[in-house]
View 1 (cartoon, rainbow, N blue to C red):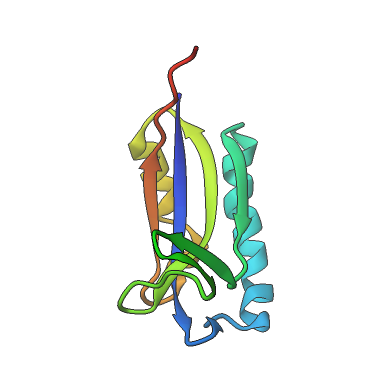
View 2 (view 1 turned 180 degrees about the vertical axis):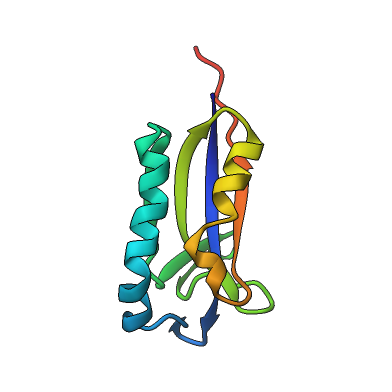
Length: 118
């Protein structure tokens, strides 16, 4: 089996997420069911939403406060690590991800490459 990283991307406001507390509360059962489907197959490794605040380290130093946003204010808002038999299997799960109800949202799927053993 291959391990995959799913990055959940969503549009943001100037100083926070667009989703309100009410939106998040309403979405929680959908997320629990969606993640539960993966977990019940024994394929969930880890998942978590991300806080909005961030530190960005580059050659100029450290910038604190806001996360990296794409030009259209889309940013990574959470992730999921899983294992699956194929990329197509993960793509099928991702088509029903609750994040997709929001305009400008997406699930980026990245296969992970294991480090060679010593």
